[in-house]
Length: 225
Length: 37
Image (tube, rainbow over all chains, first blue to last red; front, side, top):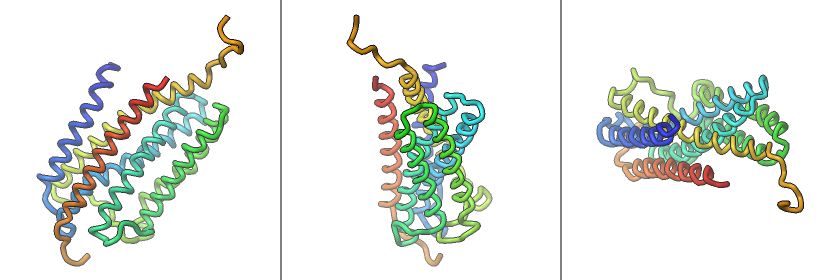
């Protein structure tokens, strides 16, 4: 099972994103207004979904830790936060590359972009907090509370366009786009999901090892007997 | 929105190459961090 996951998950992720790239670049039709530039959507949107999902996983794991004090939940929270920050930065960079030809600017303080930036910085603060607190139990508790505060940004991101408008377009639905467009988006979404699961698994193992090192007794002074 | 955006393939390729490099780079980072003692 472990071996299958170690090899199968990355292989599945790479294969799915490769197929998604082909469908997005070569099969899906150009958009009516944005023309070919809309193909950036097939990587930008899945990155956004993975980032938000990762932050929600961190939120749930943090609540579980606060309720049950399970160190594995703390490790999941830490791992998912870092993977979420990775996808969050990817989302921002890809959005910027998309904004230049469509909006004429690399960046603007639009409500969607602003809420994404604030939430991303909040989770960077969460990761920094974990580095600064030495006591393992205190670190896990403080980090869990910080994660709950930072995750408040997720619904703000999701509803920012509906609530405050701005330049960012509303979410499309399968009914508002051509079928090959929805297919390309779905394939890449699954590919990114497999990458998320693979990254989460690798990062979770790192977090568990750090927890074990925290619990290990310090080496005896004076060297070996 | 008015008019249709012409071209822009340099932005599309940039986005996809950034995506592939970022995924590969982060995977490598996690792999090597996982090997650290």
